[in-house]
Image 1 (cartoon, rainbow, N blue to C red):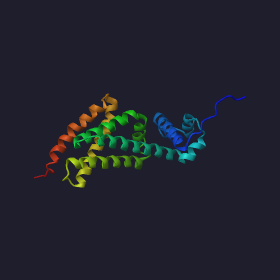
Image 2 (image 1 turned 135 degrees about the horizontal axis):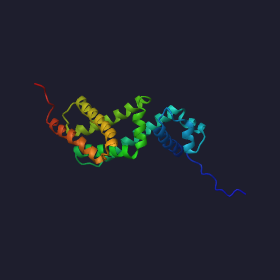
Image 3 (image 1 turned 90 degrees about the horizontal axis):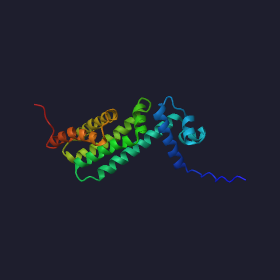
Image 4 (image 1 turned 135 degrees about the vertical axis):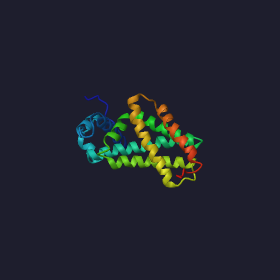
Length: 201
């Protein structure tokens, strides 16, 4: 007589979460090109056809991993900024949340930036999302600045955050330190810009 407990049926949403978790881990460890769907399936404990049923292909699975990271990143930065009472604190909290997310989700971060050549459009969508988010924060500090100037400032901040994130992983710099370094430069400049854009003679 088989006394083993029946296997619990896993819902679609939970199964997809399990697959994405496994894919991020496998892609992060092996790189997208060297990873296989067999390895992801084995990590989850399902057959390979299950992966294709949910995501269609290995590339589709990669894009789903990136889409989830994009949604999570917007959620954590938006939530952090929403708890602030001043424009400066909004930017500081949002930036800190960005660095802390990358630290908690190191495999996802590695995947995002190591596979940019394969999933370039998806990565650019994340950058555009963060640029729009930051431009909205900056508008509170410099309400008279035109939209293009705000977007330009936001592009600078997003690029700086990416470079800081790569550097801090090698230099043992904390999320708080990286945030301070960014704010040292960015907020000092914005404080002056709020009075009006600088004009060349």
